[in-house]
Length: 284
Image 1: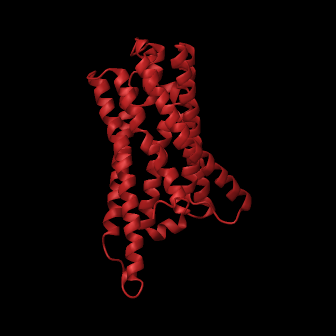
Image 2: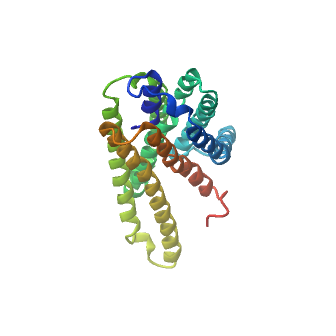
Image 3: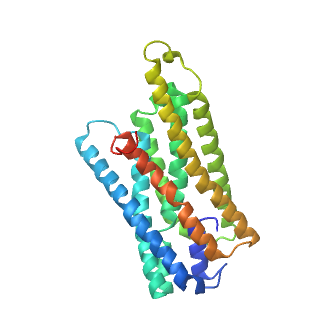
């Protein structure tokens, strides 16, 4: 399975995986139920809080929304839709109803593709902010804000209509290309930022050197964690795609692994959003 979308839709339609028995086994129902509870307890409150905070900021109009915050708001909305899909999917597992399975599959492409696109854009924004700060300042004008909003709208359209492409016989290769390109971009941007953070800058000499070093050290750790989590998701997506092509692992096992490997990438941007605003008192 290269993604949740291709897996679930192909399974429902009987185009690639005609068996339906694995979806109604007790073990699979238990795993799906545990994953739903985990998302409801961990991810859903974060998404609701972030979206409420975003609505308050829009009403106050005290500051311009940063690009990273905008991506976080969009991704939080997609994660809420995905959580709703998992709840419906769990109900279908308990009822062993194929129609409910097909209904739930409409929700899964949103967070899967949304994570890939918005995480990649977040890494590119950090790359510009650190490597090309002068260019990055120009991205805060109204023109680039409109481009950002239109890009986010296009990502939503791609995620919404992703189900229309899963019937294509070469969808596995398209998704593999998407995962490969995203992996290269994320890896390059993150390594470039880490390389700059480990080198002394012109403003680090003098009395403020210790404070600058602490700030760079915090940024260094954040980039490391962000990179490790994204590499976990993207690399496993590529491995799962290869296993699907070679038919080396059954589809139920791939599903169980994929849903858990995608959970850290769902939490990383919301947690960084809270840490940036000092709501995470446990993370100093």
